[in-house]
Length: 103
Image 1 (spheres, helix red, strand yellow):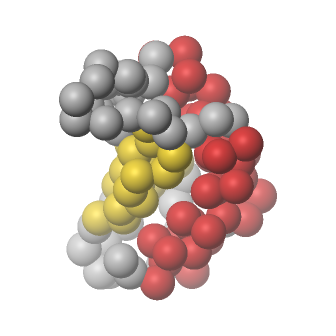
Image 2 (cartoon, helix red, strand yellow):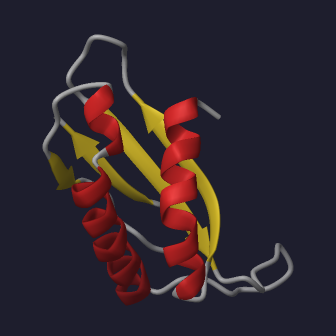
C-alpha cells in the first residue's frame, strides 16, 4: 500500500466502521506527473464471507460515498500529489467498489 493510500485508509476507516461496515481496500491509481487519479474504496458488512450472500446496498454505498467525499474535501490528502477536482465515477454494488476520478 502506498503512503498516500495508508493516509486515506487511516482517515476514512473510523467513519466506515461507525457506519457499520468493514474497510476492505483503498487503492489510488494514476501515473506520476499526470492529472488523473482514480481512488477505489471497497467496503463490506463485517459478517460478509465467501459462504454467505451478505453485501452492501446501493443506498449504503451512497451514504459511505458522501461521508468519504466530505472527509476528502476537508483533509484533501491528494492535493500533495496533484491539483485535483473529484467527481463520482463508479457504480457501487455487490462485488463492485466505489470509485472517484480526480482531475
